[in-house]
Image (tube, rainbow, N blue to C red; front, side):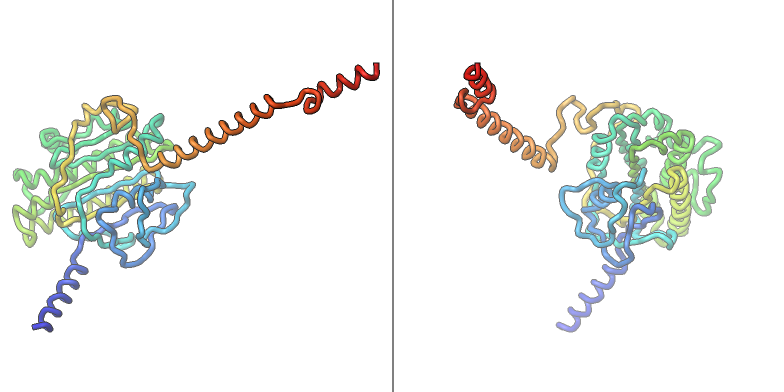
Length: 353
């Protein structure tokens, strides 16, 4: 019995290690170094990993050896994170780095977006986070006007797919049916990827400024196809291949737009442990505010740097106060006839006269 239990544990560990979620680094500039190894990425620290690759600090150190020390003076001008739900792995290029991800929980890149907008608020950073299937959209920055024509709601995406230059006229659908609601949801997400790269190609000035950009996209169309037809169906296999090819093309286009200085991550997640609850808002209603974290004109929340700044100001003021007290005390108790050179020279001149 004990031997059977031991064998089951070994098999479970093998299966857990073989079939796991995966983080693929499709594109990476020379300034960011990823080491070869089988180190699993903590699922709850993906946002911190993105922050570190962009050159921002994090509140807690990330003890993950896969990320090496890069050039601090040449950071990526853009980071793209595409989360694909419903599949553990995709047939992506092998020339990039791939790491398994453990304990994946719902996350967002709000902290990274707030850091970008707080530091580069006077420039034109692109901060775009969206999930087309759930109509969750989050945008801040002065570049909002560029993406006003981007279709994000399901109704807009249906209308976009009916146009002549949509993905329906260029992709090999194979077993997918354009009249099926689930298939259209999957294809609409591919349309969003193509429209983003097309908009950036027409507004290349956004990729040439000094502010970093971030794109966080969550795709769940493949998951819905798996639920509808099954993961062994021809529809799911065709959709997986189409998505893999589209992601390769999207990564190449984004890298070319940013002249090779862009990070492209593909995170494949079978399922999250808990549902992600996030407040959504329309891309057309997002105001251009100076403080993205406070739409009510409130002050910024204190962060982990507050203690450092507070101590610097506190001890500087204490030092200045002590200096003023000491100088004032010495001036008050100074003997004019002995300590002051003015009175000393005056007395000598009077004696000589």
